[in-house]
Image (cartoon, rainbow, N blue to C red; front, side, top):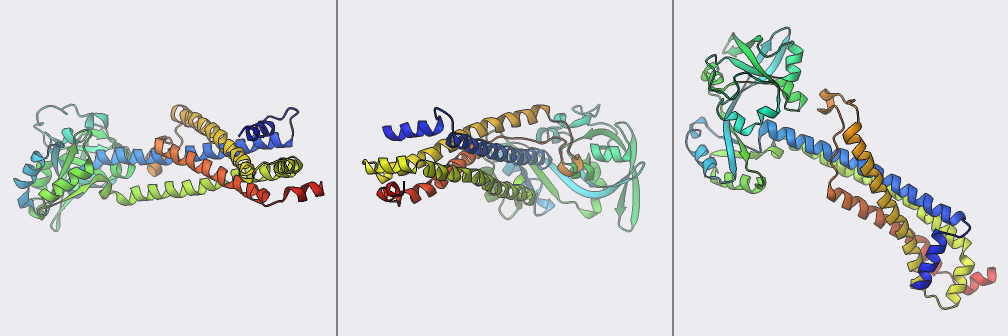
Length: 399
């Protein structure tokens, strides 16, 4: 191993400089830039996944239980949820449709919420843009209140305290009911904030009593609870009486799209790492050409084929290790700058955020590092294999 390390040091840090030493560091820079780009892109995709998870759990809660019939609501569903130790809180909701009228028209899904328990499941205190004055107090005497999402409130040009008209259909007739806007919220998903409005559950039930609105339960789990295990237990207890859905199952298409994009970008950007690692092949071929006489002499003096192979593999591995290390450090610095200093330049109506979210995950770093090292080592084996097949005496005759 001693001669191999001596030769490697000579190639990496030549005494008088040279083409080989310069090529080594060019290869390192290429791998580093590719790894840094891959790290930043995967951090952005992971950041969007984190944003979707946080916002969708706010909207839907961890688990949603939907009874097959309203007759099930009073006893068995609530009993099953109370019996599950991992359930922290649950709240009933009902859904219908209507139109909000005020300086324009907004078609909305009316979500009836229970005044006493909705705050135990949905963290409203984190979501208020304009907080209701009576939130957290006993049920208000004026029950015709409505909470709007921020985009819808901006569209209708209303603020907390203003009155709006809600148009609903009652059979063939249409009814217009005045509601006072007592709160404006922002759950973080533009389409949802634009299309959903909350009113009191009992009021919604009274308005649509003849239709018999089907209830749902939003369920919040205790911190650290395994959502998959809890969902399976609840589904087993409520089999035949209700469906149990995790938040990810309710928005599976969005999450799958993000994960598929992340995987495809990983593969595409690994090609960039591979193109950068191609410099290793060029570097080692140049090394083999410039040092073919020295290598042939060492082979003739007893250097074995596997030692020659190790020489080139270690040189490629060195490029990979330093390139990946520098690339991760550079990528980490770029992610830090993006997280702390980037301006708001994204359209919230398209991306649901105004700044790029970043989430650097340890497993992403493992995949990036392993991919870069494997590619560098594999590409360094190409010239090594070609040199092993050459006969040292033939090379010396040509020299």
